[in-house]
Length: 553
Image (cartoon, rainbow, N blue to C red; front, side):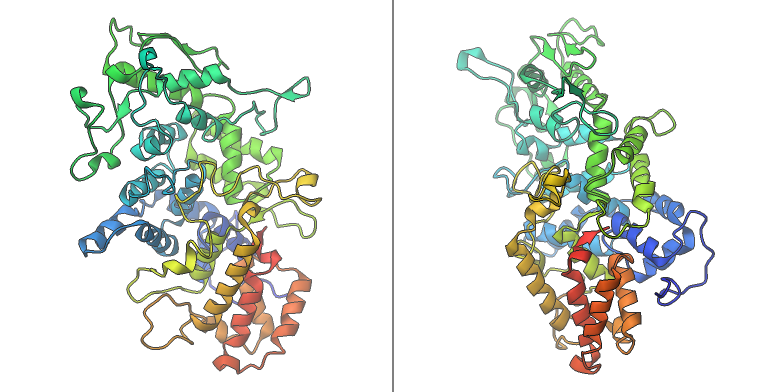
């Protein structure tokens, strides 16, 4: 076996004290923290080390998506969700702040909104602003992010907190409970009480619920009185987002006349906290004011954020999106401990949480071959970005506007396009059978890995590898193309080619049997076929449609 780093990515550098110590380790790390490893980034990571790379990424400003839409709009391009998806692909492939971009994608699958909602299907700018908001908060504090999500009009429309009104018994009107349920069930604490390691708290052998209907009703009353930021008090019901739609880009504003001031509001009872009717305990105000509405919101969000479930619940979700579908309880506990206290007494520091996730021994350990429960399935969108980044995807106009290539025909996954608030797939989905469900394991992404999408992806890869690269496209082709020139230079050395592809695409996890099978096939292909490209394109097609590749370890 050729040692990675000595064959393909040779460079002069001093090894960093914490690693990575070879190209396999560098590629695996980049697979977890970016939209796909590239040869230059593997080299750079090995030069500066994990922590310096993380510090660089944490310091980079957000490459926002909304300016991309604004630029095309200024060129008289009609802006709809295809342009939003195009912006995402362009940023995923080329933005320097790869870690932040990857976190935005992960957070969008946890703090879900979607253009599949009738209220949002005509709002590409608003949805893009929401996605950029996730990027702005990706390395901040989860308490701040939770409030920004709660007050964003996109979320307000998606989960019907926007325009939520206080009860009116005369017309049998009660506050909408939708957001009250989902902020607890999906965004913060889950349905049952958890230990710090993410395992369920059991009493008499049964799990303990985190909240009940009274709690839902209490939060529903808190989440009343919010609408467009600029609504006048005397026209709250009928005001709009403004002539230029600015309301979609500003946090919702409060109105005390439509807020449920009266009556006690039961919150999460881990500390026995509830809000008394009328006057906030902190303010001691004799009458209700707009500030009362804000204070009620602050108290409610603090109550959620400080629940002991948030650390293990959110930490496990983020680990699943970046590293492993089945993190060990010890892994979850280590990350949740950092969520609870970043070492300086701060709770919810996402920068510290992300560092803890990707630098954990369970994330950095060499994958165990055969029978391992580590890793996760690469969802289709991440396979696309990895392949396109690895082989230098480019487009003459820089737009990557081949919309038909990635959505919706060939993958159901594009940001903010989930069919439900539960994301494209459930975090606790387990494929039936002895290897997953009966073994007590989870396989979230397998919920959308249907026969249809498996076939479509395979067909598209075959076409793209064979016909959509610089050695095959006609001179006047103006779409996205890949480059296999580096790999073509290895066509006379199958071992070198396979080692290169193993490093770049699989982080060195290719088994000996898979390598032998591929080598035997490659040497049977005439070296000059397809102008010397066929050995490369066949190897690529076979690798990226193989089970060993699809399961990222």
